[in-house]
Image 1: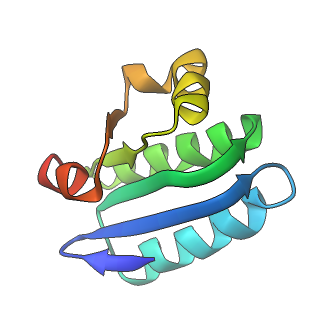
Image 2: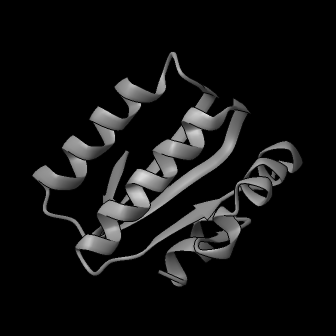
Image 3: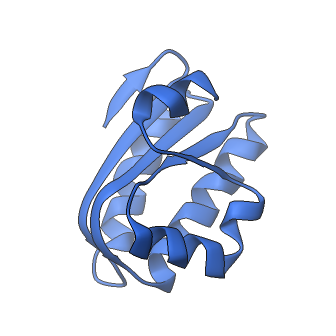
Length: 107
């Protein structure tokens, strides 16, 4: 995780499932709230698995950003993850970009 202007860039790796989401959520929220940030970029490019718990994690971070009048964007170039995002309906409310640079530009 790294702070960028008034946002947090989070790079997720490996699996985002019911075993890992609670710990991940706590770490993200601690950084986001402790540093009084507004926006967030979630980089999903290095995820190789995500289940409904991962979708829930993204939805919760979306809610946090909206409550602070901020925005959240995703970075993904993984067809499996993209399919999960589309099936969940997240792509209707959250934009996805292929690179962190494009995501940050469009915050």
